[in-house]
Length: 118
Picture 1: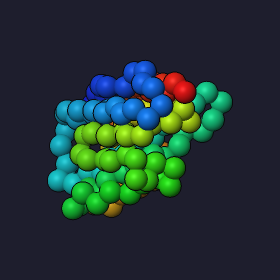
Picture 2: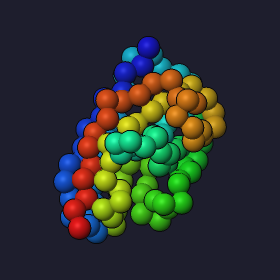
Picture 3: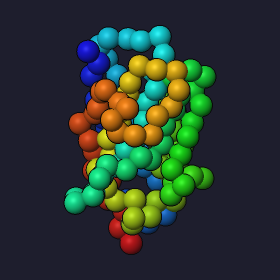
Picture 4: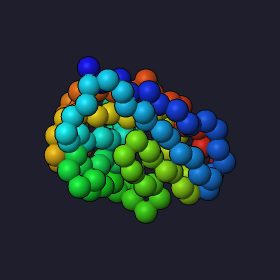
């Protein structure tokens, strides 16, 4: 079993920056992919960014490309916009590639609120 514990998030003005952290503990894998998703009330969980289990190749949703940077265990968010407001979740699963669908991931963090004011 893997536990993911998130930290970071909060309230920031439009144009500001935040860093989200996701610490993994428990069972370890030789290769595991990680990703970040976000969700607003009444909508489905949305893919934000992922990193492959092998060679740490990043992949981004078009909506955050050029503003967000994923690394293993972190999501650096710059030039934040009000539409980035959501609960952000980190996720992990054993594997060598990156994956962009929520059901591809086995383990999830508890979620953290990010609010961007205009």
